[in-house]
Length: 297
Length: 124
Image (cartoon, rainbow over all chains, first blue to last red):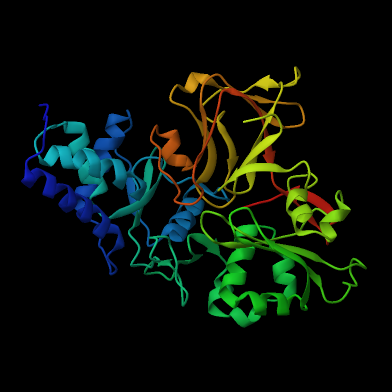
């Protein structure tokens, strides 16, 4: 059935379906798996793929599912979660769910799949003869931009204590939130990922961040073409480990206003020790004269 | 856009060049247009166009990537899983850049890690 326009009721129903799927995942509290229904639908899914109905094992969390998979297979290491049959399907399932609910489509396979996804399943590890089911988390915390985020504890957790920590959508170490005083210069130095270094800086604050690193002096600073501050700094004292100062380039992302702390490429471009524009260009392995940026985001 | 001019999106950039080295080989497959992937996220820098066949991504022996755009090219910051399923979901971070038809070289961002005395790709 093809609709040219939606009635006001049909248009209003978009929000109803959207909110159903969003609240399913993001409402905190224990959400029991609908065991009877999920067993029927997993059997249907396996049958659709040409497999016999598997043994279904209920885990308490993703970590618990991994443990069960390791014990069942005798294989150490990480076992892949499902490609289909998890919360990442909520997006497209909700889309077709809406058109099913207003009577535009009625596909038996989709209807079965929708019921499977609706059983409060977070994810699965699917083997030929066994399917390990993970329940929805009990707790999820997000920031105003809807990214996983919690300044006081885990951003997502399950009843067995499995918990993951996030800062504005970036996965971070538990201790950075639970015991920020434990953040040390060694920890920052060993954090090679710039997103994670940014998170540390935001958690402890820029002043404390550089204090942990032994203090810094500013060598040069300027605004970039978008009026965002850039600052070239070096450590107050020479680092005994490298017998030199450590140089830092602080730049602000044009799109997000996030501040990143990068080590300029002073090895190939000595001017990166003196000039903030040279320092920025050095990170693209160019001189400031070569780095002709006409647009940034 | 003139030769040697650059558009930057986070930790990647494209610079307009005259030609692609003959040693560079055409990439194929679903991942060909994904030019940089998030280390710990689903966020990727992806080349798109109204007609996907307008984009040819080449990889040289040292891993350097080049792009031949037969029509207007777009550099987008998208959720990779969504892209691989045939839809486009913006990460909400870096806005897209468009490029006129032409040849481009991919420039990743690097930093010099003083304690390891090593120049390495910026990870995010």
